[in-house]
Length: 142
Image (tube, one colour):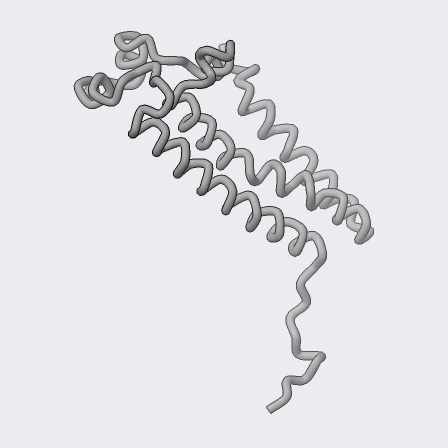
């Protein structure tokens, strides 16, 4: 039985752009997360904080544990090459990549909104990107 072409649901181009980027980046991020986790677990790169130390202090609140273990705080794991190329820092970077996927998707879909003559949605997408980037940097904290 043939389906009537007029009964097809209409998918807008900006939705396709968002979904395409989401699909590709999600697969990349999951592979990167698995690789960075394996790097940490198998000590392929030296960790800043050992797994045993984390397990022994798991009962502590996060700020107390961070102070006790002298673990990197916030973006400090990117302060220099030595602190960046550690197994636990790569795992943290993988989580950051996963969290930033919606930002990239919005950046890709914003031009599609403008091309489709829907500038209000394009501006909203760009404002969302700005807000998410400000929140990620922690500029407004303290």
